[in-house]
Image (tube, rainbow, N blue to C red):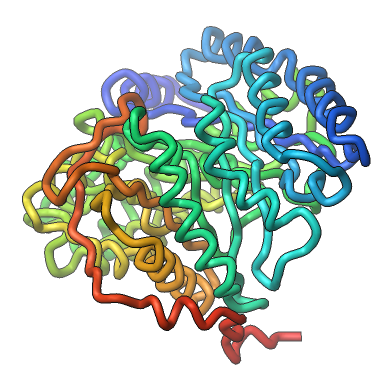
Length: 451
């Protein structure tokens, strides 16, 4: 039961500290939409999505009004489309346009699942879909794409890594007149979770129910506000304060997920408790780290502070819900975090430090602008490095870098909205071409053998 104090505290979190439900994402299986005729398959895809999700947006808006809880994005995640491409012949971009049409019809902000899972090799449909990603993203507005190129069990598919270096670059080039936005809707993953509600990496895993509701909660501003009262606390007490705050945030996500599930008649999947920042002042993970005691995000001690934050967020969330999943923890997307933007502009936060931070955060190298002339093999090597961190540490890691076509280090690329803006950051361009061109499979680590 909530008492008056709890209610007033939650109202303050929402009105003053940027607490929100970042996304309610409906996962939809498209396995029953497979057909040897791609046009028939695309029509089945459109019909199933528009049938399952027809009330998603209106239901979320009703919950917003009734409970006063902001739900920022309404999204859909579908079965990796490469699985449908495998059984049909034709241009995979037809699927992209069917998904776009469905997203527009039901009114969601984004639809994810233009994806392939190639951690152990390519199966039918995978190469065709991956090669089509730049065109698919350039010719749609709501579509997001992802490719899983590694896992702790399978190792890293270096052929896929090389391929994705080229694909990321081409996605930026084809949307150069739109702030290279194609690359901002594409993420390359290692150990991708099947229930992630956050874009661009959301897809509906084959082990999921036919239709499911997943919720992503966000509250960096709430955590920062709590830490403003932590003067004199030791780090153990700070961690405990974060845990208690995380518990309160997660309860709100549990409420919204349960209610959306009931009203839509769809199973409730998970709450993804992720401190997902925005460019708004006061809604920053970087500012939390500075509140803990760093002069600026990127300073020595940043990785340790982030590790403590991430762990405390998860511990508090797990106590508040039996349905924690997805990524859950702290996100560090540079262009989407006001504090990280400033730290990157000042030079305190560099890519090498961000890579170290990814060993202890929820995701990886996220929303980072790199010089427009960065070679494809360097992008591929960035992906390989990040995948190695995920593989060895048995955690999800990801790369979402945007080659800023026509721009150099220090210049700014602006996407607007939640995607934000940020400086073009320096990249080490010493050539990894020979390494990337070797191809093959980087073997999984010894500790992956657990059976």
